[in-house]
Amino acid sequence: MTLMDGKKLSDLKKSQIKSQVEELMKDKNARRPKLSVVLVGNDPSSELYVRNKKKACEMVGIIGETINLSATCSAKELTKVLTDLNNDSEVDGILLQLPLPSHLNEEDFIQMISPDKDVDGFHYINQGKLLQNLPTIYSCTPLGVVELLDYYKIDVVGKNVCMVGTSNIVGKPLGLMLLNRHASVDFCNRETKNLKEHTIKADILISATGRKWLITEDMVKNGAVVIDIGTIKDPITHKLYGDVDFENVKKKASFITPVPGGVGPMTIACLLENTLKLYLNHKNNCK
Image (cartoon, rainbow, N blue to C red; front, side):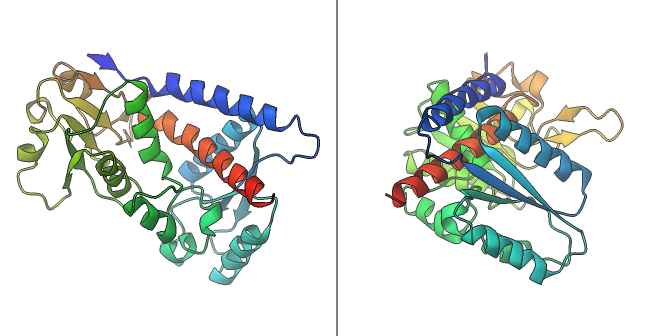
């Protein structure tokens, strides 16, 4: 069994991005890449995520800006902030931290972000390009999973992939990315009958549901690659768990990601990667 170390690969990617940014900054007329994160309200988890994103930006030489809005801000106020960022030529990537307060419709505001600044890859245009297998900005967590597979030289061509969880943010885009790489992808959701019948056939089993230990040893084929995207915090011990019963499933897996330290660190690294990609797109379009 090989542990797929997302922390190690994330650190490597951050180092590469930092070097790229330093090289770009040798041009005295160059501006730095910039990521603007919009945080509405004061949800503690969201505040922590945003601080971590800003810290990661600073580590690689990207400007990380946080725009804080009150939990009671109006749709008009949020619209103005996003419109101003869309029109700001100094901003390369815009990230709207989710969830939003209940009086604000998330989808409306996600789609308000300009596709060429959509660092999360959530805009309909970018997701449509993914569907058509055209170059685009990919959602950060799916991209992180694909880059982990590449790093560990796991070929997906012709492999049976079981994707458990079909959110628009993770499951669907990740499944499509693997389909575009010529894998055979079986999508499973909460209405799937007899989940084990699907998972036991998988050469590559991926779970992204946020349900602790949903995937047990008996559901996994010998030698399968197991990717755990779920993150669940125990309310008493504060320990993190995944969708996969790691200690038992690792006995059967050929490769497996831990929680924490697997997919999570890759999400941040790919956010930085997407920001730099958008910066280079803007730079080239200005020539």
